Image (cartoon, rainbow, N blue to C red):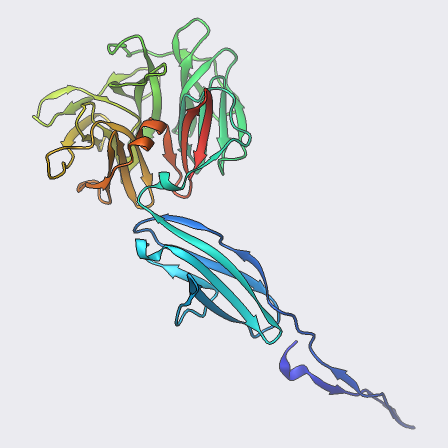
Length: 391
């Protein structure tokens, strides 16, 4: 109904003998006050990240929109959404949107938080959480996959998880999708390290023993704790078992998932040596990045998955770095390396900056941090129970 359709109406019925008219009927609009039916809610973003706050409202038109920040009007902001480009600390605050018409008004308040690290906004959740200890996590096809003993737990939101079951007695450790097949490493009942392969993630072939792992770094290492498909091959990193989880851990590559070769690195001194890292790696910008295996801060990078280059990271004014790497992940438009005493970040993979320190975070999350771009998942152990957090 429009304003032009309102008014007084009368029906006239005519034939050859005459006509008759109805009583007058008044047509008016029944108007409704605004009601906010949806809002973005509170939002936490990384510095430099684009974001938007907004509402959807029902009610009689015309409706007008107005915004305030911490109770003060925002001039010129008269749309249903509020846009933020390159979020900065100055954007923090409580934003209220008021929707009005001639029948009344409705409001919704949203809090914007701008953080230096996604860890500042993690929420611990245990809804449908895997019961077994989580060996590794990865994001494949936009979903989080957690390998937990004989199961692979799959989730699109970090709260509802669907189990995939591995072959009976097979203790899984790492998962990857390569050439449209699923590959999962683990130990068979006979103690042999093996690879299970599936076309759909549901039905798995009998695990085949893996060749090429020398376990040169000690029997405390599980041969593969992280695995990705990259540049036409599988790339994997081994990580120690047990509560210590202290590196270094070797990196390998394979064309078929069964036969593996240890990767090499070109060191800071240009020497070509066996490659090791201290935690999981991250595929970002067409390359793989991993923390170096020394106690000082360095980063490893490869463009082919075979040969890696090591580079030192910046130090502060007193010549001190943030120490050895603990975790690496993609957060917003940044690649962030979490070290013992702080974090480094880069937006181009070449120039790294020192973001600041939050050592209590780097020690807690260890190596189990991944991001889908919209969600960040971190697994840790609290009071002896495997728990995960969503940021």
